[in-house]
Image (tube, rainbow, N blue to C red; front, side):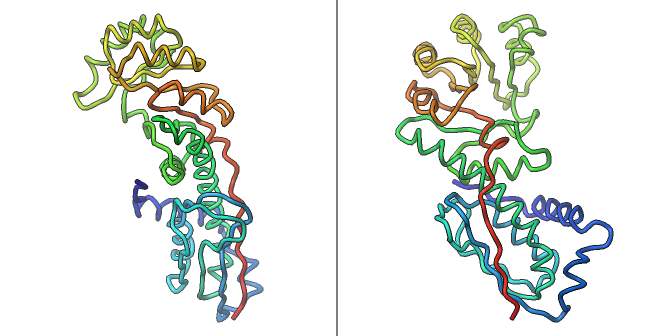
Length: 283
């Protein structure tokens, strides 16, 4: 199920993006070449195949500039599109349509790119129990939206921030004095509703985790055979997550090992932007 974006977060983000683009003097190109009375119609269309995400942000870019601009989405976030598909129709005063174009397309292209990349991974593992999940490797200031786009593409969200859950990584283990010490300290310090996950890179470490107990274990940089053995040893006692070096070529074999989650930062930090364009006509 695709979540609903918080309208307050959407409004704040778009306001900041417009302020960045307008600078000190506003859109001097549009204001000097287009009469204030001019009206226009426009469409946002795809130049390539993908999955749509970010319509709410795109609509807000125009609405904040002029509430008289009508933004009519022709599709919904999460919909798959082919080249030439019309995503939205826009009508109203020409100036705010021209001035809001780049911010709207930046959000829509970026988030649709994340959704498209996620969908490509999700399709490769659809025959397994595994879910593709994101990480905290997101664009600063865009995390909530990029993680939303992951959901639009059929993926799952990992923690949103450091305060969501305890995730004990290799450096935590080294400083805490080992797996057992780290887990015991986390259980003593975390609230009763806080989940605890710990990273391991070998079966010996996994056996320690099984002995101590955790809610989830992150199996780092393990091949499919090692992952399958790890899943066998866990035997359903905790969530198993595979991570590290996940690619479109390797994800199927990883999923077929039986893990519950496969996390990858690529879908947010390296996903190509979906190519979109806005075509406008003065009426």
